[in-house]
Image 1 (cartoon, rainbow, N blue to C red):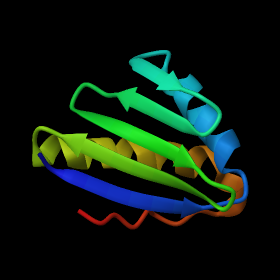
Image 2 (cartoon, one colour):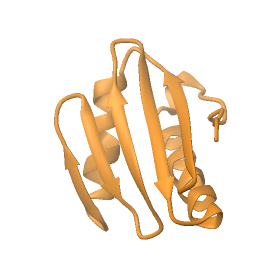
Image 3 (tube, helix red, strand yellow):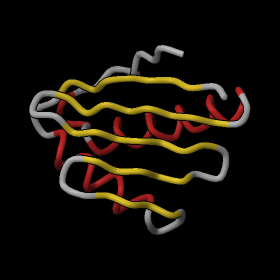
Length: 94
């Protein structure tokens, strides 16, 4: 099962985790608390973990295409929500 991980360094990780999970919950199944979230996208599952200095992403998919598509969705949304921090494209380790 293809898996990828990335980290977005920020002091607002819990805030962004909540914002992302609430946003995605309008379209897909989401479970989240104050510092963890799980998003069931159609092609992959994403786990989010908020720390004091970073937001971690882990994506698991059945296919490489599903993994790549889900990575792009997460990148697009964190870039939009954290625009004041001028985020760069997430660096993924597959």
